[in-house]
Image 1 (cartoon, rainbow, N blue to C red):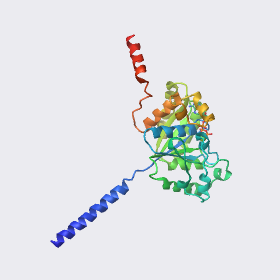
Image 2: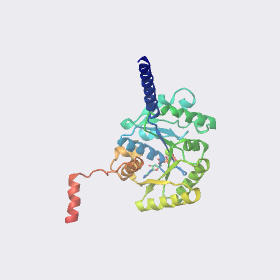
Image 3: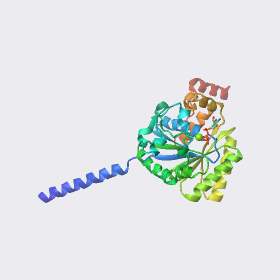
Image 4: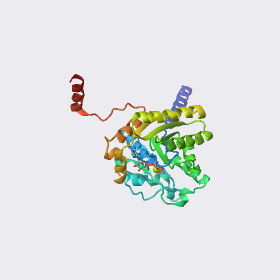
Length: 294
Ligand SMILES: Nc1ncnc2c1ncn2[C@@H]1O[C@H](COP(=O)(O)OP(=O)(O)OP(=O)(O)O)[C@@H](O)[C@H]1O
Ligand SMILES: [Mg+2]
């Protein structure tokens, strides 16, 4: 009788242990996505900020990391003034968790330092040490988006090779496409696996985006044996520049503008959600019906 009770106690203990291990093991992992480009000025930073807000509208908890070391400017786009930035982390004065700033709608930002030569010229071990510190953020958000500098520098490569997914931004200009291809080529020469998505920015039409994306994906598949997903496109939209000038993300200031709608669609695509464009209301519904029957 005593033996049986003892066996039951051991069984219960083992079960409890297993359940605890399962819970720990299943702790939700943060999806790390780097945003990059070959050529500069193609719209990475604007995309990062507004994409983060779009993902948040789907209920995702998002942290942005401004990793354009030395020329970081996401704080400027958001109109926030963080007290601390990556410089303080790299100097060992602060932990990453301590320097998270809250922006509009609760968007979380880890600001990079701007105008600091030291940040732009980090040694390889310093970048690697910093990337390993990012582990502290595990579980704090569903998605961590890293905005990088343009180009093939070692700093940028370290971030790209450490991320789960990379979003490459290009415009339809041949120079931007060629540089984006060069970047992806350099990346795949170091890391065979990994998910790469393409976003075509500043397009005049959906057709222009399709032509740009298919040129890119076909060449990448043929010469790099890399399957790149076309995540979406963003129209060239004058409201983007307007929102930069007033330091308010266009996703919030102009939610119905074409660039916002495109980014919302890209966020839906990334999350495999169905995108329902801004409802036009009952009036618009009747308007459409009248067109069919009128
Ligand atoms: N869809 C768009 N329509 C119109 N203008 C855009 C669009 N996206 C970005 N821009 C403009 O392009 C310029 C560069 O944007 P942004 O700073 O986001 O690029 P970047 O790739 O981060 O640049 P850098 O390589 O210097 O970091 C800005 O002036 C912005 O207003
Ligand atoms: Mg930028």
